[in-house]
Image: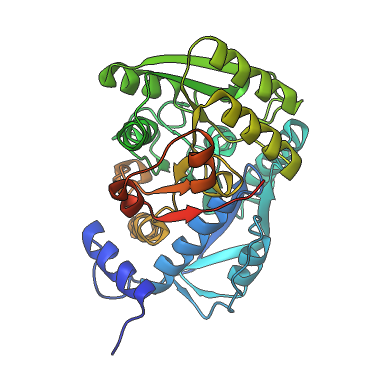
Length: 369
């Protein structure tokens, strides 16, 4: 039998995670599952896709209808397909919840779920995506397993007590060890800087790993400053000019490089930002997915090894189904750093990457503005 590349990666990842090669047991009544997500985000979709693949590899999900590849950021179509699958998990048709990155919606959804858990009592397992859901949902139950499949920094934001202990018997979160510190060290190796600025929404300083970035800069002998801008309470700028002003202030204070946490922007706003960075000759890095580099940010993290994420999460779900408390399942997931570059932006700040840097890139973009 010949394995596809995806199945081969899953096979190796499951071996590394210690999962049995035989199909996991699906005896007994399927467990009812719901999903709570902070909002639409491509990374959440990719992790869910990979987790589904991992569950299929273990035989925990069967007969799921095919979902065509898509650039959409929501997970509703994936959930709809899951509701039609069979196996050890029953994905409830009315079990897909989203905060839509809105504080009022967040409160409404939490109230609905709390009422459901109190009266209907039809939920056996809860998946969450995002810091907000990761913080909120464990407070609603002490006995239903809650699995945080993706959040920025679950230790720093307080979702879990530590890397090795979630602090709650029914809670598990995937933890990447010092992800933002590792990214900064990688960025510095590619494009050395003397003083680094972090530009982030006021409500997202912890999510952006500010303390970890500062520690990495100190280790590298570089200066560090954090610049915040007003936001809507969910991490998005009220006015894009606030981000531009933060960049100007960082430049005025002598920062020669800048890290951006997640933000929303139109194509016109991206153009304003990248023109300003070119004028200031500032190297720029994006913590989020490669979309930011495609729009003109100099460097960023490449595609994560979502096959590895999926295998890791599928194995945690297997363990929980077999009776292991979520708190007893390993949380730390190790991943190799991957980087992408925008070559036009490199030229605009006067940097000609050497051959070694280009070889190290997972992908290069040539974006005209």
